[in-house]
Length: 608
Ligand code: AGP
Image 1 (tube, rainbow, N blue to C red):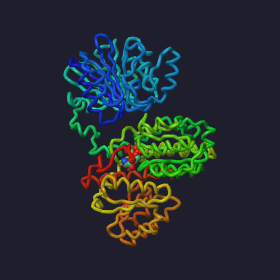
Image 2: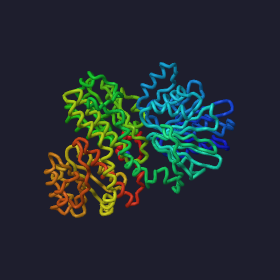
Image 3: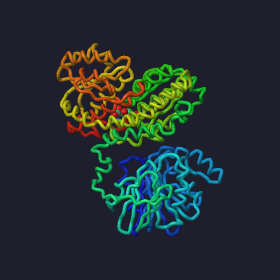
Image 4: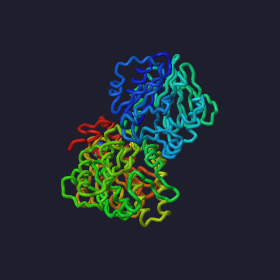
């Protein structure tokens, strides 16, 4: 996630800005930059990689500036490199801007500004903002920012400085947090309070649609309609450690709770409501090519492989294209049957998993079109793919993947919708799915609100030595994912199985010491799952059921029921996985495990 820091006051700005960026490192980033207002104009330094590289670029320059902005970038549009790093500046080198968020209509704005003679230097969406402000500037910087932002669609948290307005920072927010810090004869702007807490605990949180004009000894807040307002001043009592986790005890829990927002980001700008079809321009495939695909391979590892399994069910059911799921580590070493009519999707949060990268290269060598579904922009898999889709889930700090998994699944649902609509699916069918996709984030919020019940169930079973997870159909891979979540952070042995497979062996494990999580949602095979539950209960097993809201029958059959809202059947994994994420998390915490960095695990397995 990008980080913003701004300072204006009587002290040297460079050390304050750089220490502020360091406080934001936990958010994850791939480049950094700083702009200082000096007597000779704007001093701009940017670097790819860690902040230490930016420090090296700055060197021991004596920079007396007391006014500037700085940024850590998590790339969403444009490679992570020095050119694309923020701050961005206008063609006259008078205005500098840093931005968190996504400008959805940046292409149209870029074309408009180019026609007006603006010269662009980066691949980013952000650059249109600084040129639009410069284009709108007639002497009042706040007004220019306001005029520019009224033309913007998307999300932003920005900080802007100009050589024509020494001692002033303009900050504005729409969908990406921004806060003003109030010091003694100095003021701050940042994307979160951790960047300023060592200097002040008095802050003003900007709300969406608000613009702040900040100087060393004053600040003024207006709405984007230029109505002056007086937001309350808050006093921060959190510790820095609490703040980095957003008040959650662990990054994993924070990321589980972020899922409504990260899924909104994953689908933002990708739903064509008029035609009931997903928009995935990054695939770089023409309609004829999309229609011509007659075989799909999905390859990944771990949790991403579970997402691939769900993708198979979606694509085969609605697009009717034969889809195979391959463990990347297996695919790369066998002699796979691949030709120029094969499309391979490499699915990866990090975009650096060695086995997945190798499998993608193997498929390409055999003539396949290779596409990447990755979270990290500019990662190796992203760069080596013929096209792809970014997950926009933001950096995932917890080793156990949660928000990246649901982002992968929702992007796969978009891909399935697109492929189906390029074939036999009607716009009506497309509309129904697109509408259901849009409702998913708020349905996850409903599930998260029920966390206390899940915590109680975790407390009942956290001492178990084994768990069984059962699911059927498109929720079978969710059973696998739930088992993986539990084993990797709590170290309890857990297995996922197709529910019907239980009688072919695993039922021998069932006794009063075996908790069994059963995903028992309403649907064509609900009755079969109920039979599986009866078989478990007949052997004194304990059943924790994930069930559909309104299902009255299940409460008499299972020991515990966690309800999830109804949704489009192919989208149920996006909901059924959330209770399993929370169950694993709370059990691991109760067992005293290191949830964010489980033993023996790495966030990205870049070696074989
Ligand atoms: C999931 O919780 C694990 N951290 C692990 O299985 C992970 O999904 C796997 O290593 C693949 O990583 P990737 O998505 O970055 O390729």
